[in-house]
Image 1: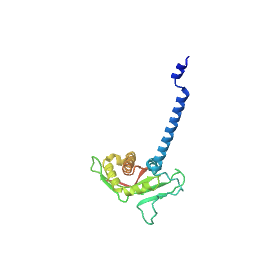
Image 2: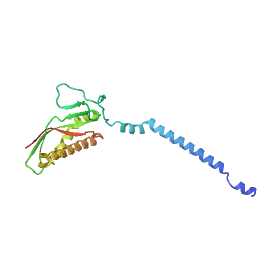
Image 3: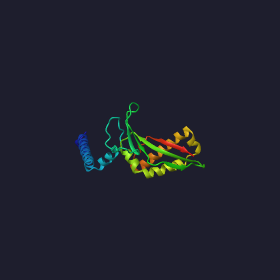
Image 4: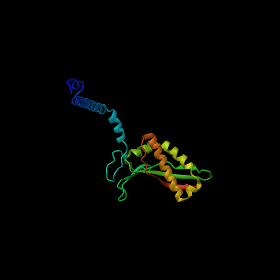
Length: 192
């Protein structure tokens, strides 16, 4: 080989070192940019919003969102701490007024008192109270779409419970971004 052949070829070591140096500079700049996003709160705010969902409350744990206990008040939120069963405590919200509706394709009517249960913190109870009007409207639509045979059989009532639970969670998810109601309970149930 002549000196001319070696002079025309670039040395491999210098190109590789240049690429590594450039790569390190880009990684450093990317890390700095990510830090700037976190420091400014743009990324952190989205993460905080995700972490701000109601949490399950274990029995015996304090719930910072629990509504204050009021003596002599039958309606509204109620905390139940039981032994055994689930490791999570259950809180109940009783709707203050009864639900009365005609039944689908029937002359029959139904009247019921309802309560909702949740294992999540007190924010779900607050939302049930805050969005009571929208929830009540949605539940009345679901009840009116129920046939008379469904309210007369235990299996039909169980299906109605699931539909009512889903309807409440849908309203809460639309308004608050989180449902959290585990079940609906019949406090009274009259078919005429």
